[in-house]
Amino acid sequence: MMQWISRNWGLKVISLVLAIGTWYYAVGEENIEVTRVIPLKIQMASPQMTVSEISTKVVQVTLSAPRTLIVNLASQDIQAVHKIGSEIKTAGEYSFRLEASEIRLPNFQIRVVKIVPETVTVKLDELIVQKLEIQPDFVGEPAVGYKLLSDELRLDPNAILTQGPKGVLEKMKSAKTEPIDLVGRIRSFYRTVEVKLPPGVKPMSESLVNVYIPIREEFGEKEFKDVPVRILRSPSASGVVDLNPDKVTLVLKGSKLYLEKLAPETLLAYVDLADLKKGDYDRPLQMVLPENVSLKDKEPIKIKVAIRSLTK
Image (cartoon, rainbow, N blue to C red):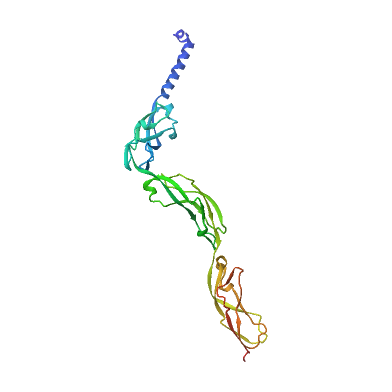
C-alpha cells in the first residue's frame, strides 16, 4: 500500500494542482446577477424633431454573467440607446418598449435579464430656431445711497439665436443670464456671463455676454422736523433772548447715503446775534451741512429775535 502512494508522486502532485485550479476556474465562471442604474439616451433619425419630455432619464437593468466579468462592472460601462425612426414626423406623445438589444454591453457573455421600466413615454416636438433677447439676472441691491442705472446698461451681444422644441421656444421672448451679484456695490463694473437656457434648448450663436453694469450715487430729498435753532455768539446787550420759531422743519437734498446718516439733533442750524442790542430783529437762519447736502428751498429762512431786559 505504501509503495503505491510513493510511486509516481510527482505526477500525483501535478494532478492535485490541476484539480484545484480547475475548481477555482469553475467557481470563477459561475454566473451571478447584478443590477445597475444607467442613463437612457434617445436618438432622433429626423433632424426636424426633438424630445421635449421623457418619462424617465434612467433605466434599471439586471445583468447575468460570469463572476469574473461582472463583479467590477460599472454603470458607465453600459449604455441604453433607443433610436426613433424617421417615420415619426409629427409632434405628439409616443411610447416604446426598451429591448435587451438596445442595452450596449462591454462583453457578449453578459446577458440582460430584466429592464425597469419596461415602457418609456416621450413627448416629441418640432425643432425650431428662434432669436431671444438677453436680460441680465441681477441679485441683491447696491450699497445704501447707490443705484443701478438701467438706462445706461449695456450688453454685447444683446440677443441670442437658439434652437429647441417649438412648444418651449414659442413661449419665450427672452433668456436670462447667470446671476450677477449687486450686493454692496458702489462702482460700475463689467461681467462676462453665460446665458441660461431651458433643457432641450441650445445656443446657435455666442452664449457668453459682456455686461456693463452702471452704478451711481443716488440723490434724493429728506424732511427733518423739529431741528433746534441755536444761538451763535450772544448779543452785546445782556438780557433775555427769544427765538421764534426756536425749532424749524428743513427739507434737505443731496446724497441719499449722507441724508440717511443725518438726524434732526445732529444738524447745526443757528442765528448769529453778535453785536445786537435790545430790540426785535429778523435774522437769517444759517446752517452747517455736509459738502454734498443742501437746502431744497433757496429762499432764506428768517428767525424773529427778541432781546429783552431782565425783569425783577
